[in-house]
Image 1 (cartoon, rainbow, N blue to C red):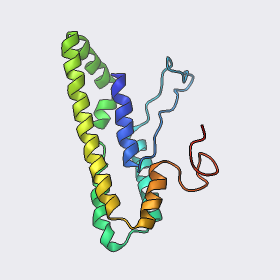
Image 2: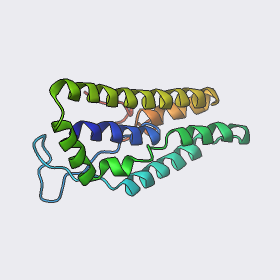
Image 3: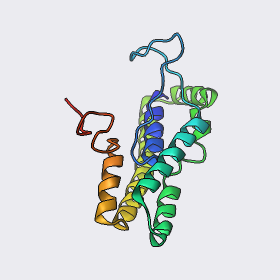
Image 4: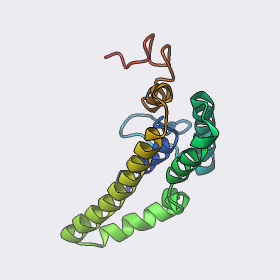
Length: 166
């Protein structure tokens, strides 16, 4: 189901301190809403997340006393163990076929159950982030805030002040 890809990508992006990983258009494909998109390889996504986490950790300049909080935070941000399977095109087709075999009320119930699972996982990540954030100094919190919003600092990729212009 196409509606599952975005929340899964968001979960991975949150694991990268809130920086978003976007799917790239397929070679020769169209990037519009009706076009086909190539799915990013799970291993590549995890590699990107690890690089972002490493960069964030370096920028935060954590003390030895903060290491356990960092480790707990990073562990809580790991994507679900079955994420690669969920993103597999064959598994997605099978899930789509299963959904199509259900009646509309059954599909709605199934979608609500899946949403509840995603919401619970997101709530855990949010709490882990708050717990880690509380272990940071005010200066570190400012660095974390800048990274979590995807700004990367004052002269980040979104303009002179790092804020979205528009």
